[in-house]
Image (cartoon, rainbow, N blue to C red):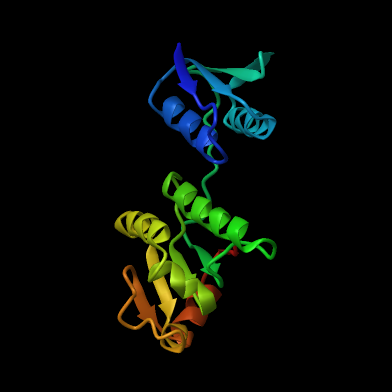
Length: 192
């Protein structure tokens, strides 16, 4: 049995740790230790979506989740169309607290690097262009995505407006015509 200690880890790390461990075995058991109910529920949901048997117990404030992967488990995939486009309009995710929003967008891009199926393109506009130029955590994750074949595009008018012409560290600067054409040809558009 493989044991994963995810105590103290916040979303999405426990699920990512579990996914990596499951990917590295053909069959067997994995036990994940976690100390919060949200991560417990997310891991259980992930296991169920992938077709794996899953049980959990609570001992001294720690959830122990056992996932059983068998070679005859149904092969399920969360893959999507290869022409998915993600559009990012801000350097934070959501409308609430700015610090939380920045934590969420960082987590979004990190989690995206861990996915097997990736979007075709990510478009940055308005304050989103700060993620390709000044926010180091996001730049590193975006470089990983670009290396894996994801096209990274930034709105040239936005880059100019914020005077970031010499600061863009990943992807290409483009124009509104290309942005519109990319979105018009997308099979799905995701906006974090």
